[in-house]
Image (cartoon, rainbow, N blue to C red; front, side):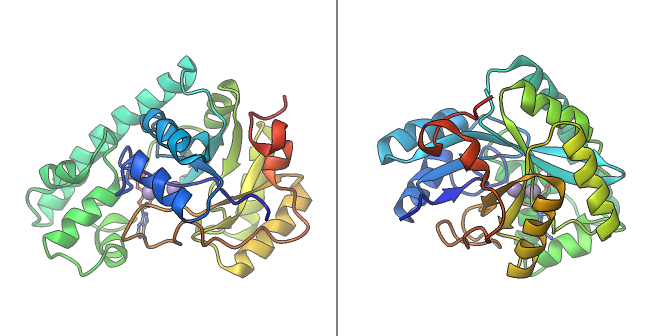
Length: 286
Ligand code: AMP
Ligand code: MN
Ligand code: MN
Ligand code: MN
């Protein structure tokens, strides 16, 4: 049996609903052999996840999902095999954390104007870690009865043009790739088929990403269709990028695919783990 890789998921350190230990245990129980914990803009869950991975006998890859603003669009860049002790990386994440904190207050102010009180305290109470995410606001709004489910809450309140939307001011693309590479990792564009951008702009993004030292893209993702995966596999060939695979699991009730249920990479793309030494388990060969 080939090793099962899941190189994208979230814990309570950001907007997942399982603690890093419970997440790793669930991955192990569902047949994942190599798991990357990639919380949004934080590495805070990695220590607990590593201890759990050692107990369960699976490999943990130190990961991150960095929020980026590229050409007025929010784009997510996954870092794999990063050194969480890297100072430039942590300084960058600290800046994103400060923006997140302000943004959380601003989202609540805007919701208040739309007649929804108590959103900041409500979202904060649902955030397990330092990262206050739109997901926490979404769960608060569902619980307070403003929409029937998380998907509809995003559509009604939290996306561009809606009352609780605040435009992102995240890291630059080159900057985020620089933090990841500087911390000894490999940068991967998360769920590239999910962005609502034209095919031409997607190609421009891939080109720029490659130019500034990006390594790969997620070909198989919990938020991609089989057709998306085939299209992204073709783009890895055109742009000479490596292919990654990740569920983007956020814990139950996740709108994405369950751990261990992800489709394999399609033929004709090069798995990013083939560049890793020692049976695909260690840091990238530099
Ligand atoms: P943030 O980084 O705080 O802006 O939050 C982004 C997170 O919100 C993503 O990582 C997803 O987990 C979640 N999210 C974004 N859009 C949606 C959506 N339409 N439905 C459900 N979750 C979403
Ligand atoms: Mn998320
Ligand atoms: Mn993402
Ligand atoms: Mn994610």
